[in-house]
Image 1 (cartoon, one colour):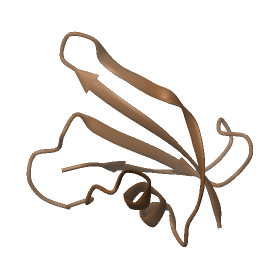
Image 2 (image 1 turned 120 degrees about the horizontal axis):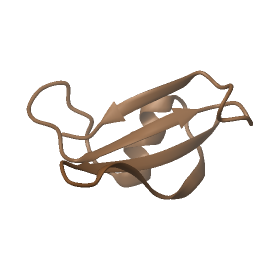
Image 3 (image 1 turned 30 degrees about the vertical axis):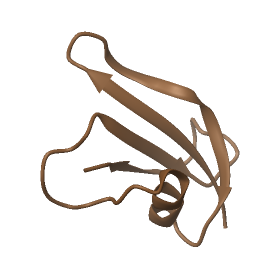
Image 4 (image 1 turned 90 degrees about the vertical axis):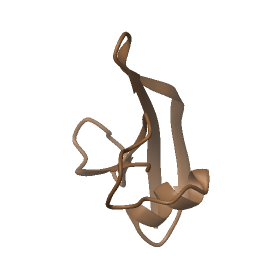
Length: 72
């Protein structure tokens, strides 16, 4: 499947902001797209790093259902 991935970071002072532009990637699932893009694990516990991704499959990002993942 073909996915688009946006990377976000945040700080208390600057808030949330996008890092770069959306990246196109082929993967078997949205979660695999997020893991394979940066090579970082997506754990379910522990404090998260200041890094997250938004993954979607449609061409129009504003109308697409998306998945969001936080890196730990």
